[in-house]
Length: 611
Image (cartoon, rainbow, N blue to C red):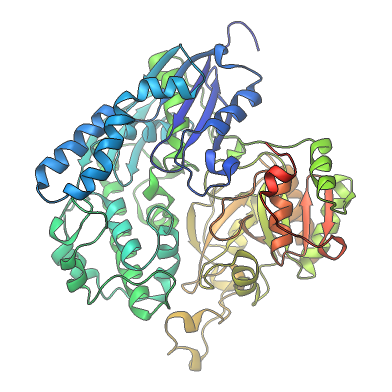
């Protein structure tokens, strides 16, 4: 650190997935979501622990910060909420009684609340609009000198979608779609209606969609939305309840689609699969039209995406294959957590008017490995504290041993290096398996992840081998693009299988790598290079030497309902509570057979004196 360093802290908080990001002279030093530290899924509170981590990673204190940025404008959001309640009154009074006092008490005095939460910070505190923060996170770390920018989510202050143009060190917003017309909320309405949790179950809807038929697409277009050629649309609010009520859908919605919402955890039927497929098809069409409009407005060959809808990797894949852009870059923390990164970079480049160096083909996200890592001594302290048995190996020996285990069909918990920023595990906090196994998808879902058996797994593949296995020849480092499996690798359905529908297709092998091939012969790919993750690249190459397959199953290191693991003890706890066979934490290898019996009594984090 030098006296001339400019430190900027970005914060997103108070809605869902709170996060913090630290930037030094424009360089992203650290970023993390609060949930990873508190172990509360989607933690919306002030990100105290994420801030603490970021400052520690930078080796600074609060007094060294020149600016703190917040990812949206609370007063502008309050204006939207107040106008919404006034517009639908007297409906929505019950909802207002819940939200109004909270906003008046906390959000309208957020400046004071933020300073207090930061321990009395008295420096400059700046605010950006929500979609500006998303757009900044999309463009400013990208590998492009110029780009069209498309951000799509539920809602910020007023905007639900924005199209912008980026050039050099700044960008401008060209068009916006405003509340209450929202692609994110349309998708969330179907998430709610099919019995999943809003703001987290959207992944399930996307994963369920290939098992269904688009039976309800025409109903959506005829009744729910008026979609225009440029991708803009109007939603018929008679079918929704998020303006005035505490649910996403109305009685009119339920009548239109033939009944009440599915009860959470009840059996999935073909109806839910068809609903999922229908809203997914509509979402993809809207995304594609908006991308074409962004191209027409900007003329750029590059597109940057952010916002919660940009986590829809199937829609992203369709833009990549069918859209007018030559190159596509997607912010790996596209949801609200990424707003913390966006506002911090926005302050550096726009407010301070600092230049933005661009390396063609390389973004500024450092592979999104921006979270904490643990030195060997700390790993050993935590493992020893729970009585774990382990062996410490050189990196070369460890890589070869783990590749052998994977080739034998063993499932590996893999914690190595700095934790990922964003919802995807990218080879730092991952559960790994052999994609050639036809049983691996079901086994990992039910016995390890404790989640629905239909949920797909993603393949990690060596970047220089991706074209041999997938209809794709481009970077996809953040697991945010879906591409078809190479036709030569596919296994066509046999005659007696062609009449199968829905989940009956789940256990039918679709390719040489069935555990990562969806029922429509697609896969959500992550390309791996030694530049961003040398250890993971080495493991994939070792596995390929044994099997001829440069692909591994990569799923997030967690169980259903919990955040991805952060600490060595988080990893050990998940390892012991599941049927994971072996655990790797840094240079340490642990086998399940040699571990003491695991007992969870009381608060295990307090018991072992973890911060």
